[in-house]
Length: 88
Image (cartoon, rainbow, N blue to C red; front, top):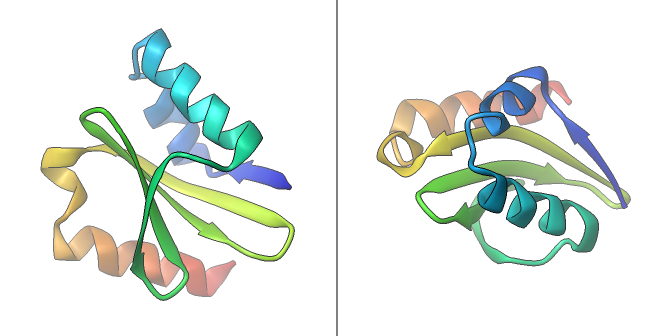
């Protein structure tokens, strides 16, 4: 599976500690972790206090955002991510 990172998600990932970054990289390589379907085509990976939002297609995964959980469940964020999925 190919994993594509949005520029914003790459930047947000840099704020993670090395340990949390390793968890995301492991997910990137194996496609496993604490994952939940948030909306049609939108998935969330929990990594400690952070959430990784992504969209998955047959052979590709698009990582859209990496955000702290205090911001992760805002309706405006979910709407923006659903809009981004439509542009992929």
